[in-house]
Length: 123
Image (cartoon, rainbow, N blue to C red; front, side, top):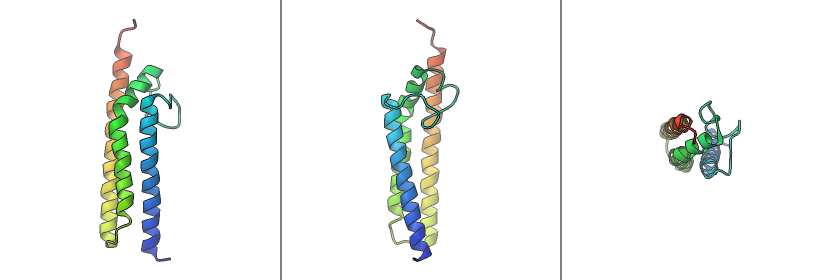
């Protein structure tokens, strides 16, 4: 098998799988179906402090995290185009950077929401 074809297949599988997983986790955590855990979601002291903080963080982070997933899926589709290796590498790099940027934005916004929950006075 041609090395470029193998690279396209690997890029497609990894980016599509990552995208599907990101979208699924974004929706599952924001809906409360996936509660506090040590495997998936925004896991830091602020979000793990309580169930309310966890949910607030993931409700706020749902949109940018899902966008990261869709960006990853779009990058996977890009791998199917017959473009030069340099253009493929550049497109994959841009897609990965956009995905990471969205994830980091979601994590930052979600952490801020979790911290706001922790600062609320108890009823």
